[in-house]
Length: 414
Image 1: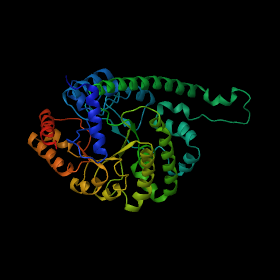
Image 2 (image 1 turned 120 degrees about the vertical axis):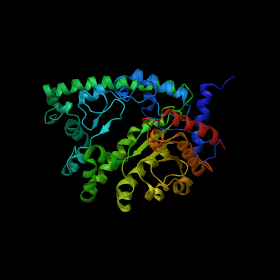
Image 3 (image 1 turned 45 degrees about the vertical axis):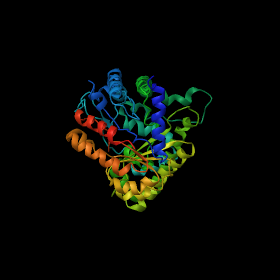
Image 4 (image 1 turned 60 degrees about the vertical axis):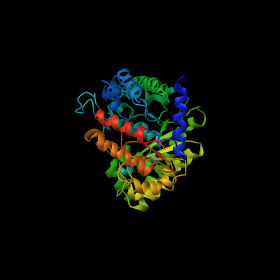
């Protein structure tokens, strides 16, 4: 009898968990971070992740039937129509009416300053009200009708308290929110449906939650990179207070880990900023690292693995990453000296990466194979290594993908 999908799932899960725990494994776990390449290679596109979930999902399932891995990113769909209704301003995406983005390209982030630095105190002191009436109308102009909602609690004997929620502008916004909710629920249901089909192939999911460094939240979604860097010099105290709010809010959002019977309990942290040269060491420690470590320590305390996904060059941060709880984290690298990473971070945390996606798209099978061998030789001895790219793969030469898997099969065993 052959191995059942349940047995394959359990074997792969154990293999990855052993690597995270810094144990030697019989072979190198293989967990490439595939993005829309799974769609592109099977007649779909990045646009379908927003507008045609069945075509995108079926393409992903076919991809994983052919390319067997130890963890999969599964399917994560976003409703393009919901974003159209909201008039989402911080991203542009394939398929959006009027976009110049190719159907085969990922979304593009558009950074704006949605709050001004003098508004930090208002945001901190009255967070939910500020988000509802100022941030959302600015970031999602389709919901500008929320901007004039206010409450006068002088007389609460009748429904007059809710008068500002019943204006034509507010009611229009609430109607849009109801449709957005329906569309987002549809996308989530399809995401779960096709992710379950990939799991039924015996492939565990990569992670089951997502988080973000508090500083990155401020920089990505509130002040923009330039604004956040200026604020780090002029409004550091306010930024630290806001970071604590984002720590508290994220921790509250992870309560499900305590109760849900999930085989995989990992939270993915894309470290969008903080790379070499982004801050001096003292700033990095105060504004970036310490708030982040509050999240890491909490997750570890409830048995959840933080997946620290560094972006950009991280050579000057390797010693700081050594402070992560030993044997409890995964640390992915994009641009770093992998030999030094193994000698430092690799002593206490499982390291992941960093086959260049540029090689996969533009190079030759022989060069891909050579780099795979380099990574295995450098990172695998003693355990604590998971194979991955240096980023998410959107395009590839099929012969390079075949060479990668063939080399891993032949060279990645102990």
